[in-house]
Length: 294
Image 1 (cartoon, rainbow, N blue to C red):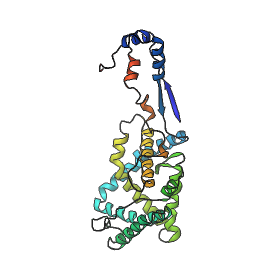
Image 2: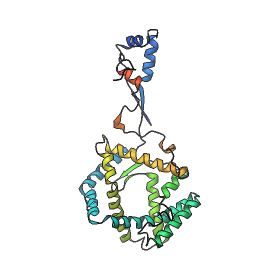
Image 3: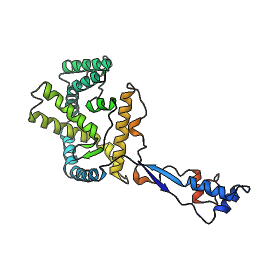
């Protein structure tokens, strides 16, 4: 949806300003052109659940400040980085079967085989995934994230409404359903230990703390000083997710976000937007020569 902001041009000096710019110009035509330039269109995100999302964002921020971030920083101080990296590699390796299935569903058989080879190498030589051997130059098999949310997007399913959920963070309805399907794959097909509450609790807590540690600097740089932290995070998430979907649809090549981001994602608090070019400055000061810098 587009929000239209109309800027009213100064009324007193329009005719004189038009004559100063071009003595032969018709002042009536100048007024018409100025009125056309005074309409600025600002695009805003599709966020039909904004009231709910903002409330959840506020709750999440309070929980993060009071408990989540302090515990994550404690985890960072207590657990050495090589150990954190090893645990992260193990859980990443356990996500490879999910990526493999989804590459098959997307008919990307080459990437599916590479993912299977990566899982086999790291599960054996890499000691159950503790070491990411497959990404070394010898094998050159980097991790490629993939899930049911990506498969739905690949086949044209829209993201649905944007959601922000405490302790989960930003997502969309499509990705929330996809993540649920991802989480059910191993418990359903393999069973124990993946279907035990002990494993799921340990996985959830460990991955949650590790992700919070890894995202700390990025969140600080993104949100500190933001006029509207909620809108800033929403824009960054949707931009990034749409870029991932576009890259997936274009065979892994870097591509501009396509239909998922048919509107530019701007912080609504940063109005009136980028349309204040030289023409708009003429409206602000009709007697100023556009060629003369401010």
